[in-house]
Length: 189
Image (cartoon, rainbow, N blue to C red; front, side):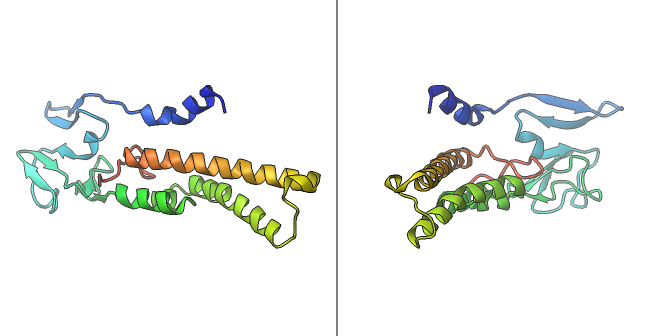
């Protein structure tokens, strides 16, 4: 594997944008505020903040509904007039599923089904080939002819891809760079 391939695999680890954004309503009151990509899910400025539109365990600070760490403000327009009511997925759960199983369960947990299915296939193929070789249905050793060489090459390739993907997932989940299916950041450990 060349250095370019390694850089392309690790490139997503370094994608993290920081920005400052402030939006105002038509009458000039502060509507939303955030200083980083994750902050836009932590609260919202409202004309009137109370326990009805900012339910517990969230709290009001002046006219801003501040979300508890387990919740996020998604969708940004609120849901039925209530804000900060979206339960965030937990980083530790996704990390443990991916680190200890490596078959895509962490991606299923985030509701990223296509990525989970693809990772499951990449992980299962070398195991199936190995088992079929062990029970004698296919010849998978290099010195047993063309079929064995092809099967062994497929098994090694998928196994190597699975290991690289596991390592990248462990790093990305550990750095909390994955988001759920609604692009909401995960709750920190």
